[in-house]
Image (cartoon, rainbow, N blue to C red; front, side, top):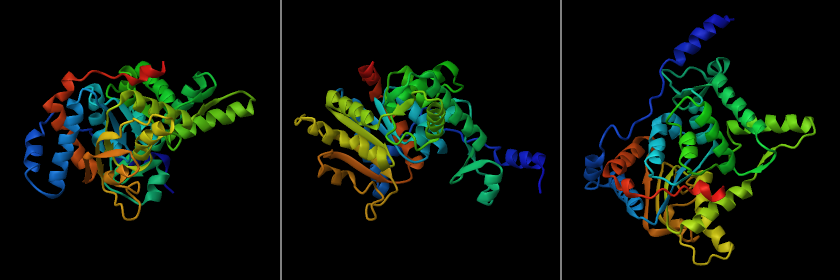
Length: 350
């Protein structure tokens, strides 16, 4: 058996190299994107996707949603997403709970993600309380601090139903008062009135904290905080109805992709027959449509459901961490965001 000191030393060795998040302002990707536009295959797809995103930014009527699934936040894109929000290049976020809670909020509390310098047996990692995301590590003990902070936030709120947007806003408020990272997407969203929706919110550290809150409240025969999934859909659809023209910048797929696209159909169900399909759409993914992995549809296919227009859409089949920084840097340096009016859609629910 190894002693605790040996375990601590081994853990420190494995968690010795922090992931450094890319700064899209530090390099100008415009020449690269321009050159890619003269190439073929995925390079040309990325150049066209970047052009479509720039068109979203240049369109004064367009509300832009950043849609995130997968682990790009943990892998080094966290500051890129934060910069898009800070620079008024997105107006709303729809994401997985893991992206928002286990990754962004987690770092907002002062914790870090680490590069795996080696990948030992995963049971060894388990014995050291290290969680693995491909070649990235998280300290499970730090992640439990995230769970417990969610619990504390729930305990501070009045009992009742909350959309994920409303609860995440309280998380942003907490980070604004107690956080340890300026570049937190959750914190910046709170400060800039940008709503964040997580349609599968409890599939994350938020779930552990909220379950603990509810179990203790039920034990003490007290009312508790609940997540209202229908309120999520209603609120996001309300934004779509009032926004009119919309664009989607989608990283990955899954529930966030379908959720934001379905707002068009939901608006029609509510009697808004003149609702616009999402005018612009970009999706960066490695998923294939043939086995249903690409949320079972390309963007063109989504047009058959009345969700996405086909004139200004582009699929980019690439690992997002390798191409998103180029797209975002190009758009930041072209500067169309400088003339955009902030939407502040969170104020809609005050």
